[in-house]
Length: 273
Image (cartoon, rainbow, N blue to C red; front, side):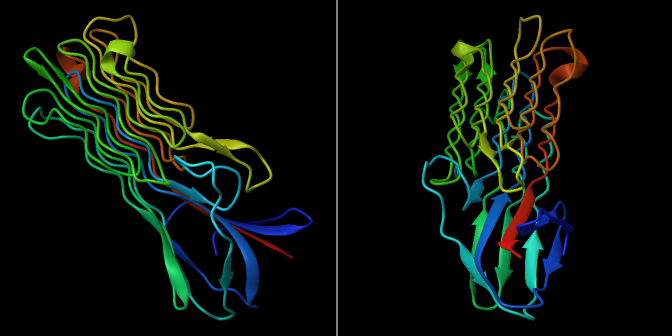
């Protein structure tokens, strides 16, 4: 199942898309990392998309310093590995960015392990508030009001930032930190670093909020969060694939109003040879 690596001590299965895993022998003390897809950014001074939820038995778990319990898997059982897609960015002020897809490990005899997709960022006009998710999407700014960031899922991620009235969308939440408010620049929340593959990689960063007047949009959080857009500078950037990063929020002007897509998630399984 997946891309298989042997490091001299452990077998590591890396799933970058939905697949299945069938152990040829019973396995105990199995480690995992399950990262969901990131949410899409909001439209027109939109909030950044929230990062996909993160659960792991190795190093940090999102919004918590507690690692999760290892699992056992039965020989010959087919386990379904679902890898969540990134959510689409919003192209309308009346709709938020789309939430990312959830990632999971499921099979007979196993309590399903699910990480929740990141919340989409809020959009100017009718959809100001960011969506709830693994990490919450940032709120959108509007000339007559401001939107609140969505909430994150306990043990998986953090809240998105509130917008700043009329100037900046809030940053999407990351697995390691909440998104910044618009008044603080709308930076996406940072992800967390995980070493299940033997290499320290940061996953699940929130997308940056879109800005009205700035030389560059707000940066995304470490771990694949996309940059927000700014007027006349360029489009928002997508969350990084297979890191679960949130997409950047769109700016207030021209062709850069659209929010960017979130990045897809990943599932990794590790066990001793």
